Image (cartoon, rainbow, N blue to C red; front, side, top):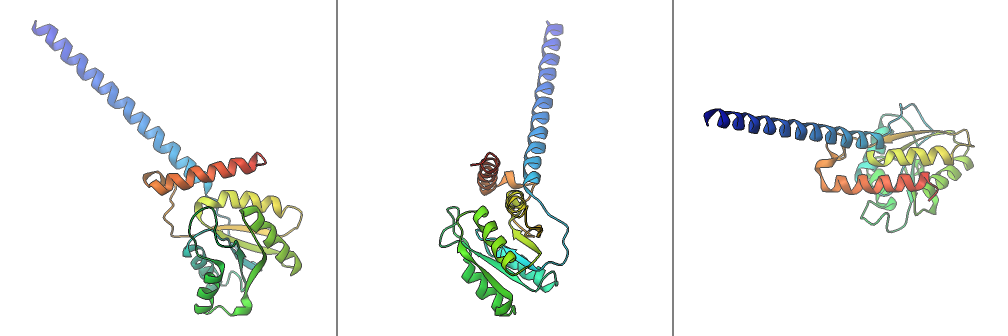
Length: 208
């Protein structure tokens, strides 16, 4: 009887250990996958002086603040704001008019702030409007500032739109930012933005 009990106890411990190992492996693989998904969305090019800093619409004040910091670090003496009307992607954001006021209040001369001449409803339309502005002014380089999770799609779209121009485009994510490749999956809004971004990115790649 005692031997049977001992065997049963050992078997239960062994099964419990196996379950723990399996759960640990699943957790480790899940975290690795989530971090990989987050990391892939982030593109950050090495920066050099550019003719203009482009602030994409659709985010909060952090994009404007990042552009202002780059301006103060002498990466460019010109800031371009894109115009996207009243609503972008279904959430509130800092309007280009508000960003212009903030930039003026932080010492950027009005002549150093330009606005695109087209109301854009997507990142692709923003890229096309920026391309037209840079081409008309014979500018040959720009730094595009946007949220980290948006940089992969922005990089891909700007690369395609600017392919025939010879204009150098550098993508730069805002920092610091709530989105991190290592922890986005711990936040509800992280899941919202990552899932939405992958849907839009894949849709663009598929020609949607």
